[in-house]
Length: 132
Image (tube, rainbow, N blue to C red; front, side, top):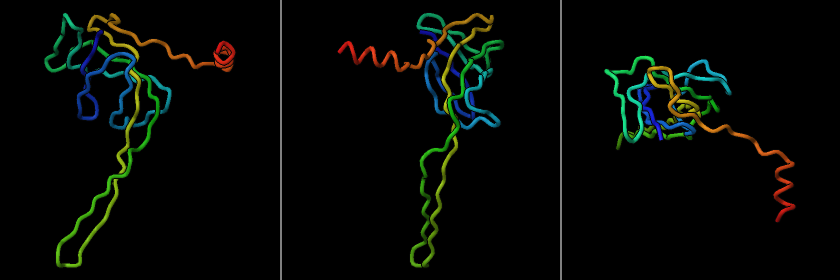
C-alpha cells in the first residue's frame, strides 16, 4: 500500500489513497473541488521509499474537498485569584475535510488510486430488503 507524507497548514500528514483527513482550513475552496498538494516530503510503500530534500520535485497528491466546517468550542477561562477578575472566551477552529484520491510519483506515474464511491440507490436498498 503506497503512502505519502504531505505538508499543509504547517503540519505534516502521512496519507494513503482513500483516506479522509481533517486539515487546517484551505482558503477560498468550495466543496466538491479538486485540490493538489505539491509539498510532498516523502512517498513510497513497504519496500521502497523516496525522500525529498526538503520536498520531492514533481510528486503530488490529488484530493477532493468534502466540506469546510468548524470544530467544537474550546473554552478558555482565565482567573486571577483574590482580585475578582475572570474572563471566559470560546474558540472554534476552522477545518477542511478532504479525501485523498491519487498519489503521483515524481515521474507523474500514479502510485495508488482510491476506489470510486458509489452512492447506493433505492433499488439496491429494496433488493437487499427483499432478499432477507
